[in-house]
Length: 66
Image (tube, rainbow, N blue to C red):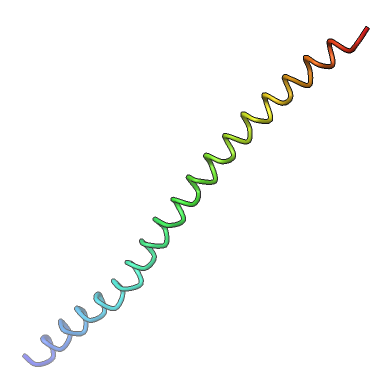
């Protein structure tokens, strides 16, 4: 009876030990996903700025051309 209880206790401790890194990984993934979302918004804004600048440049080039 001692050995099965010992095995159950070790199994529980193993799961508890693995839960700590799992929670840390979860927190870091959440943080990384937030950074990726921020970077995505910045890239989208930069793309819009670049498209506006390219349109203005093309319009200016057509006006200057004879």
